[in-house]
Length: 433
Image (cartoon, rainbow, N blue to C red; front, side, top):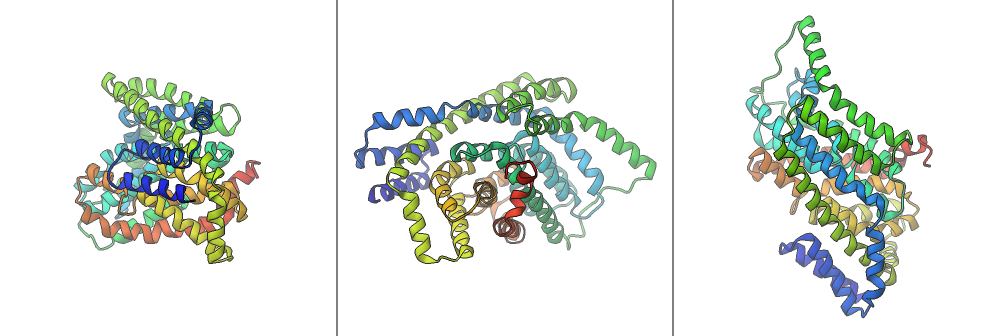
């Protein structure tokens, strides 16, 4: 156990002092191997075999698809459609941004791509309409994380792979929590903007003009709206595997971005390819290290030790679930969602299974937890990226961010944790439970 504690301490210290995450994971693995006197010849093949799965091909493909969609103009058409339904409300542009993030997330599967694309479209509109910069930037930081919950989700793909669960079931488990979160984010946004009378709303249109404008915008958005139907319909209809669906999303996005929305140029295509390659390389290095670490955790009996520690505190399932959530929030506060899933899944999944928690239910709990951690200081990677995209001082974002965490993220987490059917309803209907 001493070796594991030293390894975890090395990992945390490396992250705090700014060591790149893949190197931090590798350093932690190296500490266990050297101090624990393990044979690397036994461990390296295990990491390689796990990291060479065909399922993981979906990762670079979904990352590539998200980058292509970000640059193609698809996001603009989605925003225009949602704006027609709620643009007349004070705070309506905030609602447009939230549900545009949900729609874009259902195509790209990437929170970062969602933040960059929808943020760059919506934030200038909101500032021009008189929306406070701090509230708007805080909202996009949280709303972009719907890309982690609304399938296809790279986070759920990684969780399913590491935990040996059905990818489709994990995708389905996060849909209802994602919709609950989107609704609560929208409601909190409207409440925070209640006293801002200076905010402009979409001018009232005559019925004929409204119908005509809606028809034009819907027509323009049809290719974008077809994308999630093809991707998710193909997966859940049994026509395609997630890996094949990721490939189809790339094949579909390229001609749509070039010939229909005309936003995808040669430079954008090259940047997307480079980003997908570098990001996938980082993920694969981390995955290789984590697969070795997970084998070492099992050998050192770490999950059982954590379970014994939790049971020594309380045997009440409500308290135990709070402890699980506290652990996940802490992990989410220290690192990005991908790193957090890679680290926490092999440690905590055996623990929650022994506590009688369905692993698919746990997928939803983990998704909401890690999403909240990504906007919770001190690390809060999405909070700081939102500040950069929105050109907003971080101090102006803190108060609205805390409000969004307290009245949107926390209720969603509690509902997801203590009402299992919220997560399990769709997997059960689909026959996975």
